[in-house]
Image (cartoon, rainbow, N blue to C red; front, side):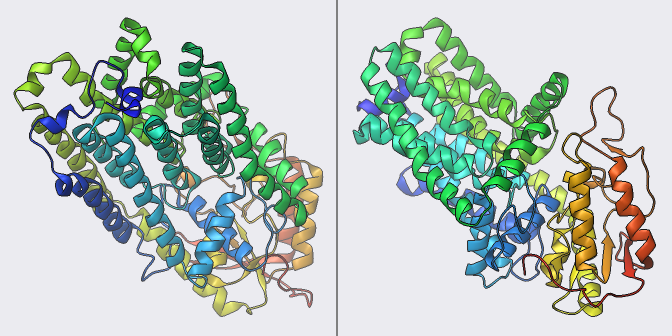
Length: 567
């Protein structure tokens, strides 16, 4: 067995033992990731029909729409954190700008990028699990990952874009020995992957951190101190290869200070929830990420690996894959639950470690009951488990498409609103959307009257102050948009994040019931000036779409009305 296989499996289990049972064969083996990839394409075609209808469908449609529009603003000359306010790191804006440039500004460019990202993650994941454990474990792990993540649908979100980076880090680990890479080069590549994940969103570094920890523990346990130091130096160097050009870009466009305020200062406040909220989010995430396949398989796999670590410490520490399988899922769940928010897409990054544990489950069960493998029945049992996992995800997706009218209603609402805006404003005019509906800007071609494309920062405790609200009011007065769209009426509970513009409500907060916890967003006294200005200068004239969004029109259009930012 090669050094890489020893690293992956230790001295106890041959990860390729399954190939000596009835073999899958090369063609059948690769049919697994190919079939999984085709399923992803089918799900995208059905749920996100961007090839024939400009729309944004995801586990968080409001976030997906905003990231698309932010990419469009960058594509047309805007600057992150200056042209628009947002608390994500800059990489998703740059990726989306490139994808939209590929499509000439059409949504299908984003669709194509996301499909490519998901398929790449599937192929890398299958290759990593096959190197680590063999073909049959990789079959179950790949099925678990691909069908779960497609059902969760973190499309055009940071959590979706990080998936191939996660599996790239794992593949790097399991092929390190056989490829005879130096520790420095291993660290450099791992540092690059970790930095790319960080600049998507800071808490998406779980895979790179977990792989790095597993390697450091193994090297220190084997007294290979020089290699450990070389690994760390390489990791820092790799991170610098990504960080320095991005910082240079932000400095060159004058956005470094705004980047620090929005992506670090705001996120520090955003994550300031109580411990019980974080614990609740941790449990929610574990259940949500595993709901599309049997939760028993990966969690039993984790328990069996923990048992091995306890009973055979030397062998387990000699294999960084064992350590990775144990620490990766808890690390991802801890990072995703830092904000204490129970948003499903926050935990999409946990699908990959769950899949790795599903593959490990096959190896551990076989090691405990080797007679099953000897009779040649093991591969069949695990293939049936993979089939069952796939059927659960397929059934869940089919039921969602058949029963859930949310996606279609949202697309209809946004389309009708954009059509209304185009019919009642000039191409050079800007509009103000109050709420979370960046699609209206994207589809109507009308720019935002303020850099606050959505008003959540104005509602964030300890961040929203008189100066921030004053800036927002000044931008609105300067732009003097002809139309204001109140996109808050009849919002889903998960999207009801902004108070209605109809009436000042000093008691408003979200969540509405906090049971002693701090609200995530709340009305501030300073915001009353926004309501006073709108009601003094605008009149509600019409409702649009199935959700009855309210259109406000400027009572006396100003000659200064026009496009301001980002167009």
